[in-house]
Image 1 (tube, rainbow, N blue to C red):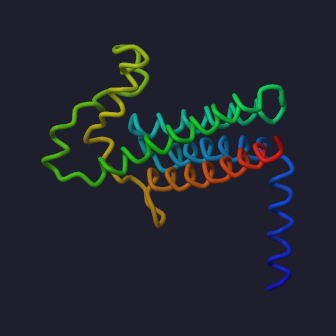
Image 2 (image 1 turned 45 degrees about the vertical axis):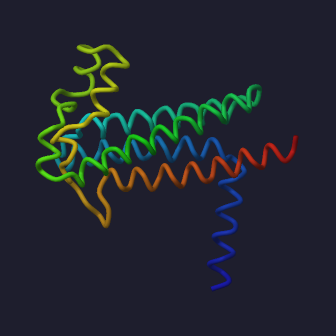
Length: 175
């Protein structure tokens, strides 16, 4: 048991040494895994699922910038934490839609088109707003391993927000 704890402690030390770089690698790995599962399992992601991937991409991008540039620590951490809170909102909305009754689903009209088409048609902010409204395609529970995609996304966003807030508080203590 002590060897396992020692291994976990070593792994945690390695993770913290390159904190932002490891966050970026994990975020991009989640996107690649979701894309591979789409191709292999022939799952078609709804606009909220695609939006979740973009949020993971934004988080990974901001983390990658923070890994190689320490000039704007506060701004970088605000962008990272902001993207994570937006991701929590997107995945929470999808979980809410997945738990709506059939009558509640018929009143939704946001996910009629793919995300890119919605953004082209309604503009960037209008397209994001329409995607966040959701629709019947966002309620599908296509794949499940203990949790579905949206629930796993929420779990990862919560873990990342916890770790990044700890990192921010650690930085604030140094000041």
